[in-house]
Image (spheres, rainbow, N blue to C red):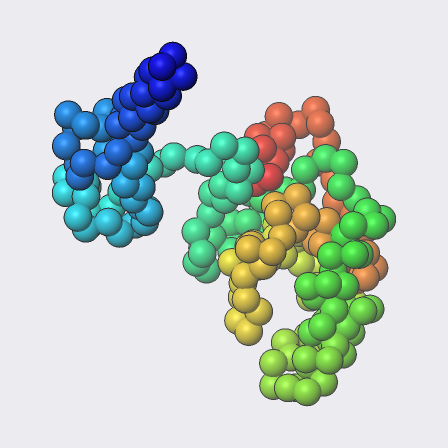
Length: 211
C-alpha cells in the first residue's frame, strides 16, 4: 500500500512540475515568458511583425549620429574624398611616431596588397599590369620623381579612398598598417623617411587626428 501511495505522489509531483513547462499558446497565465518557449529569430534590420515603432520595422535601433564603435576611434579620417581633401592631406595627414621604412610588416603587407599591380620592386610590372597595361598609371615606377616627392599624406589618402584605377584599401588595411605600406613605398622610391617630432604639438595633433 505504501509503495502504491509513493508512486501516486511521485506521479503527481511529476505532473505538477511538468505543468509549468506545458505549452498553452502565448497565454502568460500558463507561461511566465512566452518568448522563452517560442524563440524568435530576430533579424537586426528587418522584423516587420515586431517593433513597429522602429524605422522599417527593424529589431534594433540605429546608432546615434557620430557614434564610434569601441576601439575604432583610429578609423576616423577627417578629410573628404575629394580633390580638396587630397590636396589637404599633404600637410594635414602625417605618420604616427614609431613607424619607419624598415618596418618589416610594411613589406609584408605591400607584397600582399600592392605587388600584384605595382610589382615587388615598385616598377609597375606586377601580374595585373602585365595583363592589362591600360591600368598602369602615368608614372613608370616608384623611383620616378613624382612618387619620390609625393607627400606621404597623399599616399595615405589614396590608400584610404582610392584614386583613378586604384580602389580603396581601407577595408583590408588598418590605419597603422596603411602607414607601414606608405613608408615601404617611400623606401622603394629611394626617398628619405619623414618622421614627426614629438615636441611639435601641432604635428602631434595632426598625427592623432590621422591615425
